[in-house]
Image 1 (cartoon, rainbow, N blue to C red):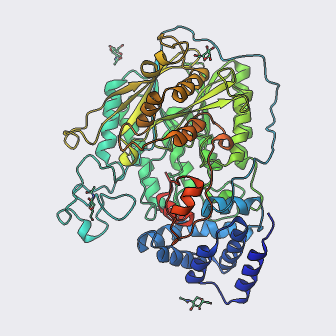
Image 2: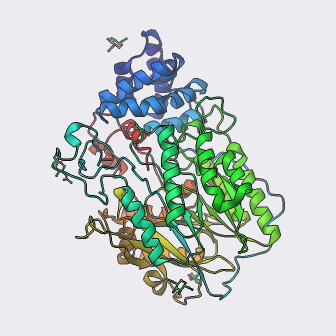
Image 3: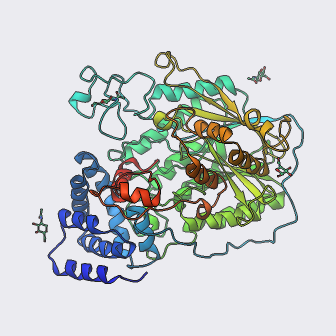
Length: 601
Ligand SMILES: *[C@@H]1O[C@H](CO)[C@@H](O)[C@H](O)[C@H]1NC(C)=O
Ligand SMILES: *[C@@H]1O[C@H](CO)[C@@H](O)[C@H](O)[C@H]1NC(C)=O
Ligand SMILES: *[C@@H]1O[C@H](CO)[C@@H](O)[C@H](O)[C@H]1NC(C)=O
Ligand SMILES: *[C@@H]1O[C@H](CO)[C@@H](O)[C@H](O)[C@H]1NC(C)=O
């Protein structure tokens, strides 16, 4: 990336000026509209970071308050927690560079998404001439999948559900307190709040009714609630202990879980081991591994204690469950913006290869679980591509992948070739579980009917409870929402309706063709993503993007775009006309400042 004359001039001016303060940085952000200009902005921020974490936090908090993006207490709390990580990045950063360009993309939306840095994952043996096994026809088992519970232990019945923060139902101020507000929260939850404990218990009771005989449950992470500007290490530890103790006592089945991006304080903070910092997430791994040990044994728990990832072979089934820590590929884990971004943080991909190789050699089946699906725009394209290489190499061993994070009921198909996306090249399927927290839809979970030999998924049934139901606040009623085989099986060509037929990657690929040709079916899928709540309209352009995302287990193929730099004050409508509708009407900086407190999802 070359410096533009503009940015060089701007930087020289900045260097001549005295020290930066919140209003000069705010003005600079306002004035910066290009990727090249972003380098000048980063140089100014780097200058502030050089003065120390306190100076950096104070200036950026001032910027946040000036922008009006968040309440001052949220600005102070969120930036106090996350600012030191950004300052650490900036101090070590070469500007411009691959790292600084990604930083500008993620934080300011000013640079384009960059191409993957080529890197060949190495494999101990060549890919064998094996294919995905056909269903055994044996009597199926059930697997439960729930995610993103985001339990708020400070949820207060009667507190204001219509507050100015990203999650409500807490007495943040005296006027938010029970008896003082005209928007009192009910006992079982609200769409503007994270899950009360009662909703969490209702979930486990519903699972106990619907699938009491399930072999195990998958929980794909995010225990902690979203008031991240207040979340500290003590709360994370308490929340994790409480949630996993509740699962252990209320669910009569083993739970195989994954580490979520919210399961740390500061939110998203998972420094790889070789980073020199006093901010550590070891306490997260200690807490999780201690709680997981009863389900995965001491050897796998020992792995989890190192990286938040583990591999566990079930004693009674020919199946290995591999839980990966996806925070090492998450764009908002700001520890990853090192001078040279690591190809394989903590060697997790090499570890995954060794686990899959051992499974292949032993003739075992494997499933991969994690928090963030690899095809989303939240994933670094690099890590996502490297994982894609692994999925291709072991496509005959991996029965399926299971994720959460998006809060949507969704799926993503991986291909052996993205230039020839077809039923024949479709070779992995990622199932994405809807959230329990009501913030993005009706609380829901999935139950898979699964072949007990191949572990191929034969059907996916979603259960949900509607907050709009008249009896919800007294007693949430969970009902079957739909079954994928019932809803979609008859529509693909040829139809897939037999109970014993697997919903293979090719099936899901063929379903995307139905979505393209039959808009009514696509609109049903679109509504099901949020379980029918607050369904966004999706026109032809939106549908094209949506289908593109379905057909991408690698982020570089998901059709995501970054719109040009938008500042705080400018009317964004003109930009929106040129670039197409933007999800966020406001600056990317604002979006990120607000994401700092929301921790995104
Ligand atoms: C910030 O710095 C500028 C230029 O150095 C100066 O004019 C301004 O008064 C400062 N503002 C505050 C609030 O300190
Ligand atoms: C929230 O409060 C605003 C007024 O402050 C009101 O206009 C709005 O309807 C309320 N929203 C809900 C969901 O009650
Ligand atoms: C669970 O298994 C028991 C014992 O085999 C059986 O009686 C019961 O019907 C099963 N329940 C469900 C919901 O499948
Ligand atoms: C997918 O569609 C193709 C035809 O386009 C068909 O040959 C194939 O059998 C279908 N696969 C599945 C799993 O339905």
